[in-house]
Image (cartoon, rainbow, N blue to C red; front, side, top):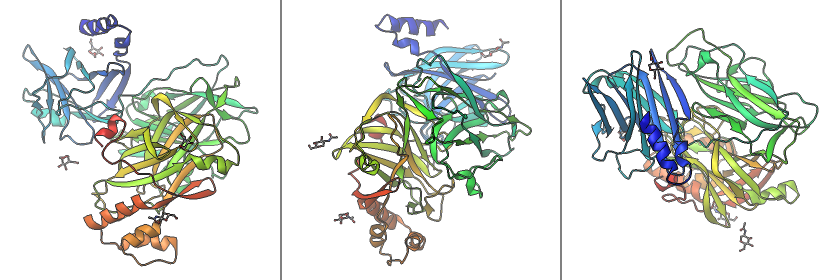
Length: 552
Ligand SMILES: *[C@@H]1O[C@H](CO)[C@@H](O)[C@H](O)[C@H]1NC(C)=O
Ligand SMILES: *[C@@H]1O[C@H](CO)[C@@H](O)[C@H](O)[C@H]1NC(C)=O
Ligand SMILES: *[C@@H]1O[C@H](CO)[C@@H](O)[C@H](O)[C@H]1NC(C)=O
Ligand SMILES: *[C@@H]1O[C@H](CO)[C@@H](O)[C@H](O)[C@H]1NC(C)=O
């Protein structure tokens, strides 16, 4: 413990109190087949350091592996343990298979290694970037984390004892002054029997608080039922529009009953390890007026890898709302690719990119009124199972000026709202390009856009203020240009043209042709019911402005 203390106080004396953030402020429980592991961490954005703690059932050694992909190969590993009475501690990596190999450069620092009758615990810290290619770079991306432990000194028994989870280490905590008059409302499950299956996406429709006058939602707090802690994996709330059909029972979000995939406007997303969400002090989400949604869809993702039966879940989101209105209404802009089969991904692709364009210059025209700039403070990325990278590129006057959110290791099972380090100004006229990179190596037919989880989507949600009455700003490309490039016969209807993709003999050459045509095509930007034909701006492939994009 004293070592951590030294680190904290040592850094205070170096000016400022940055080191204090290296507290283990986050905790996550991972439930495995028999036992569970606990991971704690804390980041210091200013000094670019991270502290990690892993606690496992009592063992002679414990290791933590980090990677961008769900793949052992290339993982960065830190190991602590005991060989008799001698402490073991080193920085390692996995070449191709377990066990790990010691790194030439030792970059982790030990804070603490201890064990008692029931648990073994390893605490370490490290810089985000070490310049050792065998180390993992901590970026604003989802990290695939595995805790290993065992008894054998050569670590060979480790592969049997492993807990894995996706984690976003870099979450920025939001905490602001709350109004004095605060009301609470729970959007939650009600004694839902968690199925024994590995993975369940359960959806239900729940009314928002019924208020006669305008109120502002100012905070979301996640309440996980202690019974299902470690099984509830992520939670999303989507706003329903007035036409949505409200189904009374809980159902499969992505099953055959498509009523459960209605309501696509994300309001909030939380994933394991995530924190409560506070709206910026200047803004809140309006409820209670005739323009506001009445219902939400609550989506909870359960990972029941133990196949435990009989767990009843009451998890959900507690909404805090207030009649003390804030200065501005908060809004959410959905940008990306129009969810429709015109989006397609050929089979056998390693990294096929889809593009959606939002030209905010069209927004004032579709509202028939001048619109001021928007301030974006958070984002949420959404695509389905083939996607492994999503980024929102920000353009002004044809120049790529920055990122509006990205994750180069996007995980469908881990969608969460993320704060920008600083709010970002979006001027009317700026363009937002949403790029999704998907892999279809394991598929043998074309993947089309659509709401089911086996179809694809490519969306970015921007949380901003002040609210403008626009929900979506997305696009689709000129399909004729793509079918021409592929040498397909012109079809009578759009649907025929879309499904003529099934007739293509997909190989490296045809995939490359399709990719090039998609990037050259003009896009039809759709804002509510208005459409504009626009070219896609030049999208940088290799370089970017964010750290994530530098190695994209
Ligand atoms: C893991 O990565 C290696 C090397 O990049 C690759 O050959 C292997 O197919 C990957 N395994 C999985 C399960 O993706
Ligand atoms: C053993 O260590 C764990 C983890 O630090 C702790 O939660 C537990 O209370 C300890 N047990 C005893 C008997 O001290
Ligand atoms: C884009 O460039 C034009 C012409 O140089 C300028 O008038 C306009 O203000 C610029 N727009 C933005 C958003 O910077
Ligand atoms: C895009 O639209 C412009 C203007 O209508 C047209 O000149 C151009 O050929 C189009 N590009 C493609 C690739 O279809």
